[in-house]
Every structure is written in structure tokens, then in C-alpha cells.
Image (tube, rainbow, N blue to C red; front, side):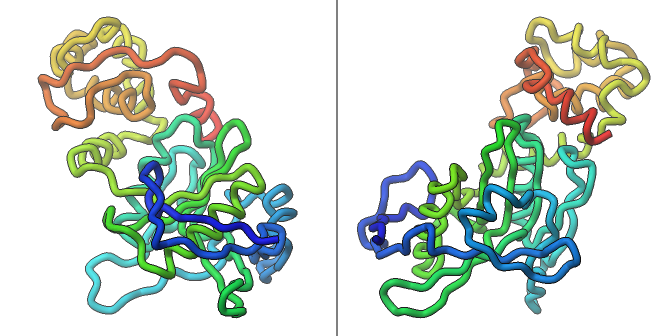
Length: 279
């Protein structure tokens, strides 16, 4: 039995009929990943998805170094895991940053699995290594690629997206091509990410004072001044905005006049449980 998938290369957009193609039965898809001793292991995807903690695995393949490009492989320190996650491009680094800020995410890894299948049309064995794996607190998981633009995927990427989408759906996972965020949002979150380490949560003992200063929405700088000495309060404030304990409109440039208000209540919403695990 084969599924016919019409792929939209971007999550939430209408499917594109020209990208239709035959997709193998998810049960026929294989997974390749690093075993405990570092050697590669190949298993049926359906079984591996249930048994393997992909968020704990190293990359199954190195990130390529492309001569002439200004951006090469690097590392992102994750507030979610308390460790480093490798990335291969600026677009991927940005998406790791956004996932790291998501309070629902409890695990992150880069390229931990290669999916292998036989193409129903050509009969060839094909492979694809998605760039990011994210584990959510409720056990769900995301496999994702991080294109540098929101343009439709090329033919090979679109066909792979169809296969990965069906394979992930069969095991309760999700596959997405993560569209780059707006430039202002990315710049704001990148600034807040500079204060993502748990040491800023209550730096100088100002954690409680900062939250109390924004029980009602007020300008960022006015609240910082109300919480204590401004230069001491700002790192705590930025950490609270990163973790979601405080909120602001990040679609506009962040500044002294930005309105900041209280965030959702509860340990999952404010990220406190994650910070305790990462600390």
C-alpha cells in the first residue's frame, strides 16, 4: 500500500498540486542513527521513533563546510538542555534559538537521524537527514528543516518533505520546514537570547522585584527602574522576557518604551522546570 501525498513545503500553507508524488508506506522507511558505541545503527523507523531518544544523540552526519560561504558550522548553547547543539547555517541557528525559547520544548538535537526509503517511482534508495529534532514535554516530537528563505522547496526537498511528513505522522511526530521569522522578531529574540542562562533569573536577588514591577503593563525602562538599579535589573528583565515570565510585543523593535506585562502563570509556561533541569 502506498500513500499519495500532496506536499506543501511550508507549514500552514495550501498544498501545491505540482508537488504530488507517490510516497512509500511509512512502515517501509528505515532510520539510521548513532548507537551507544558511536557506530551507525539501522532500524525500522516505526520502532526507532518509539524507542530511541533522538534528542540525546549526536549528528548522524557532519555538517558540510561550503567554501565561499560566510557562515559555517557552529554551536548553540541551549537553555533547554544545558548543553551545546550543533548547527550548520545561520537559518538553522535562528530556528534552534526559537525552539530553545519555546517552553514546551524539553529536548533539542541536530541531525540525529537519517531516514532511508525506496522511491516508488524510480526504485532508487533515497535518504534525507532533517536538520533539527525537538522533543516536547508531552512526549510529542518535531523533525524539521531550516531553509534560508520562505521560497517553495526544490523538487528533491519537496519530495523528501512528503515522505518525512507521512513517516512522522504515522508515529505521532510532526515534520515541518520552518519558515524564517520576521527580521525584527529574530533580532529581538536574539537580543533576549543573550540573557538566556539561568544565572540571570534572579541575578542580584532582583527576580521577584522585576516580576512585581510588571504586574500591570508598563514601559520596559520604567519597570526596570521601579525594580531597582536599572543596570542590575535589565538582565533579569530580559531573562524573564526570554523565558516567558514576562511578555512584550516582539514584532516591534525592543526598547525602553516597549510595553512589558506579566506572562502566563504556571511552571511549564514560565520555563522554571526547564531551568531547574538545565541548571
